[in-house]
Image (cartoon, rainbow over all chains, first blue to last red; front, top):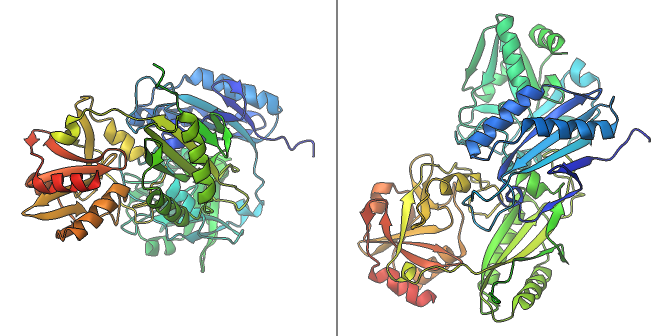
Length: 276
Length: 276
């Protein structure tokens, strides 16, 4: 298979596949990441991803990475990979290599990792007919200091995504400790009810997805009424349409949540047309 | 300085200082760690640390490491370091190297990292007169699925330990989202009030320290009444004696919490004598 290239990595600008064992990303999950879609060699929504990365660095007091340098390193990997390919670009920024102990020292120099992975191949009907998801038992703990940014502390998502084995299930919906629906393990969640668009409030937990941001902007342009709030599984299950979003697949209608079935509706389809 | 040896590392049994960039410990904090005290070449409380490590692996569904192998690798590093030295042994077990995506695959083979660090040198008066601590603003989010085990998702501890610059402050006390006192960023918390021993409940968050366990066992032997519950800063500040514990320093009396001062008391001193 000549098109199947292995993953490529640049670590602080050097090709390689190893990082220092003293990296604080490994010891404490002390860093941030972004996952970007590469479509025919072009990076999608670069500015949005970089804005979230910088905001995460500010929140964790990690020195801001040089965005121009990150871009040139990303382009370098993409051109090695084949300039016209689809792929996934992952950028990790950690606080860098450090001594033992939680307290960050100013001596640490952030580590930047740029990785290029083969593009996942999802069945066409995920967009056309919708996907199956499940409600997870693992809960998201709320901490506004860590909410919305895409940091490297992801054990809750790992435990949640271990809950199902059925390969027909593509994601799991996670609730917070007060049983509010929040998001998928790797997606944001939207639903339509009586013509209005609903999405969970992410003040306490959850990741502020790039595709979520774009959907909210489109909804505003379409003069859709958007409600950002605290909702329960019952609210979600009474929806007229449900969809999940992320940077890689865009918008997927949800056709089934456990034993409950749904149909892709007109609002979802309209948003999907506009996003494409 | 001939005694100042650099840190030593064994990664899956091989001497080196690098791990694969695809390790899930780095990408998601998907793993566990233990920090053990080496006193004149002897590993203290090995069985207790291994019991917690195994319990953490079980909780995260990471295949259990071979404890005999971990021990032999630890001994190998200690003998390289100088058989009669004091040091800190850190053991990290991650789920191993993996593909992109949260969902663990059975293909991943856990990574084991054994590290030996120089022993920290604390002033004698930390044990004699007590230490200064502060109350942190960063809160611990509660999630029983992650409570008590020593996992690699430690951003809350990092943010909390970034809150003070004064080198005279040795640790910060963290509260949960309901303002209950829970623990120090790197220690467990105890206090004595009217002859009874109090320590915070760790059902929702916090790490179940090895030294905490030993103190609770001693307290039982001494027929001290131990209360494990939900308490506020005011309760802590009305204590007759306060102390913090961890595997490296044992028991440190607390002599100051922000502007409030305390004195090492008879219960603390008795427990310290028994632990030594």
